[in-house]
Image 1 (spheres, each protein chain N blue to C red):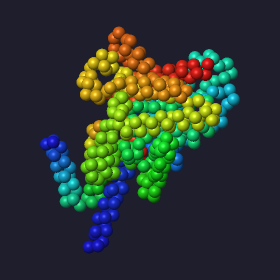
Image 2 (tube, rainbow over the protein chains, first blue to last red; image 1 turned 90 degrees about the vertical axis):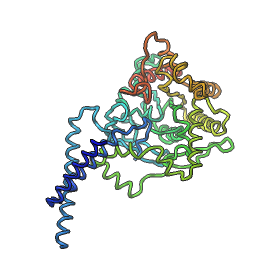
Image 3 (cartoon, rainbow over the protein chains, first blue to last red; image 1 turned 60 degrees about the horizontal axis):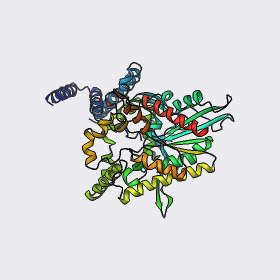
Image 4 (cartoon, rainbow over the protein chains, first blue to last red; image 1 turned 90 degrees about the horizontal axis):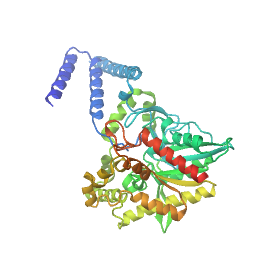
Length: 56
Length: 410
């Protein structure tokens, strides 16, 4: 948990830096990459029943 | 000031576009280099069709890696099978096998799935037919199907292929539940009910084709990033619990749902047989089976029923199954009879002239007569002994069903 918070604080510092430097185009890029990574990691670690549907 | 905000907005939108473009290119490039075990599941989706309900989208292709692994190509009619024509050759004996995810067989390559094994076995070993005749086995399976969908598919689609035999695969693990709307809560399926001993179609499948779905499908089918992100989202949000909570708001309804689920689960182990709910569930299933048999006879085709095996019974040593950790559960009336569906349907088949193939009996006899070890017919990787058939399971089941068809043809 501490490790996770540490990593998130690094990401926060990076976004703060981009904000200060007014690199507006880079902020969504970093945010999207982060979000994508979080979804993949959290989703992959969740168990799934073998009989779940593929619907939608 | 306004110009400044507009500039910021344009830069942010550009950044968003750039990140999505980067991810899309990265995913597409990396898919070529990923080893099979790291490839995500993508490209295989179902949608709802009139009458029969949900099945795979025709002509779709992709990777299945949730359990087992296969590169999937769905045929033009929406089946995980080779391309087929409706008209059969005069010298061909056609067998159709229909069922749920066990027959859909996304977990293994279709060349080693039950349909292909049956076909090869019949061609190579069924010498009762003359040299100029051959066998063809067509597979019709879709995850989550119950017997209602199988019946409607047989009479609306499979019959067009002129099958001589139709094998209906019944999976005791969930096919009773799949027939009941109150437990399934899935509107994209048809449901029957027994009223005065008559089968009545009480619910037609909803068609999931509204504008929002169409837009989503457009992006999903054209962007790998959407497909890539869908899989973890399904794992996170498409749980049975969320479906129950979306349908039932009060605690009593949820408790009723849990009670009925428990009853129907026990019913497949021979428990709760005095419950009206369980009696109705079995009678509904058997009525559909009987109707399927009669309707197929009217089309000069014969029904056989395959009872699909459960890993927790056939993939373990006899002592473990009967006296091992699950024995205490059995004492608590959790498993009165591990072969209850087989016992029940074999009697039903005898009374109604429907051949029943109980794969569990063959698999358990095979494993329980071994001196050392067992063959795992179900599961993959770290999860052997549970879940769907692996290559061993498909091969074993395919050969047994092939033998049975050959015996009947003879």
